[in-house]
Each structure stands twice: as C-alpha cells, then as structure tokens.
Image (cartoon, helix red, strand yellow):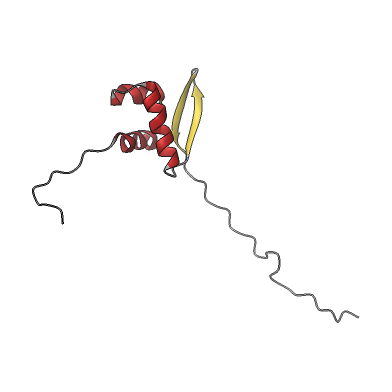
Length: 94
C-alpha cells in the first residue's frame, strides 16, 4: 500500500517526449533543449516512445525533421457481403 505522505512521482523524460509529440510536432533539437539532454538521447527517447506502441510520423519542415504522434485512421466499414457469406449457390442448377 502506498504511504499517505508520499509525493507524486515526477513525469519521466519518455512521458514528456510523448506529451510533446501528441500536442504538436517537435524536432530533435527542441526535445533536447527542453529536457536538457543531448540530441542522441532525444533520438533514443523518440525510439522508446515508438517501441512502446505509439505510431510516430516524421515530416521535413524547413530542412529539419519534425516528429509527431500519428493519429490512426478509422477503418472503413466492411462491405455488406464478404466472401463466403450471403447468397449460396446450390448444386441443383438445371
């Protein structure tokens, strides 16, 4: 059981990067500057977020790659008749 006087844990760098990418696109340099880490560490955190199952997309803007969370598209409704369902063909065709 958690103690009553325990303070809430601060957000991890990984969760901060995920939040930044969900709010808007961010470059590696922007992530590195905000979290006071190296660019390589920022690349690593982006990879960590991606490996956790979040779809990340990148777009080149003004010669700099900007990353953001890719919102999944809604699947299209299936056709009313799918293969193997619907009207059956009988073998008694004369």
